Image (cartoon, rainbow, N blue to C red; front, side, top):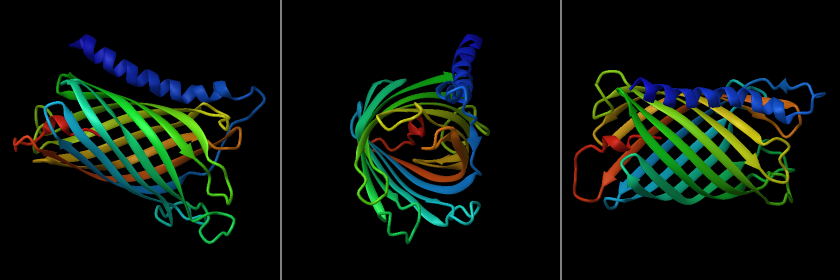
Length: 272
């Protein structure tokens, strides 16, 4: 058991350390990295999982995201950010390993409302697939998520061309039950996570895109899971040597439905 704990948490903390140093490795030695003042955002999400058979699931995410105003970085909701829709089919290889694949459609809103140099909204399409490994470490449920995204995106500038990029993501999440011996129905839990983003493409000055540290507090009730918390992100901008960071409040609901006729709570599938 001690060996399992060491392996799981060592990998997570190693990646946290990598995220803080990899950006420096990408910058020329003469460049002094600087940070922009923090901005704020609010992300609201609905997660849906439909169990179609013993092996196959339908997976869906829908997000409504707002960000702070141009003249007030602390108001959280001053401008539209994104409407984000991810869909996929999941195949369960074992109880501890599953693969999901599908499309994503993202509507990116203008960074400056009312500015005629920007289109009000631009569609970004993606193809994505991921591997999800689950393990139990004592009372704690640990998830290792490897996600791969193939993106066709453009800026909101009038006449901007679409560009293709590949993005690679790894997320380490630990579900810690607070009032029950394990993750089950009516569990109050805390879920710290760390996710690292890498992106490649012709326009990318830095392969490191972003690091996200998120701590969620949640509760499971029958086939629902309610969770939310604070996320801090850090990553480079399009200007070499200049970095941004964001404070994001996240509020989410997950709902699972089992079409096999089994009505008991699907506690195994409370994961995000």
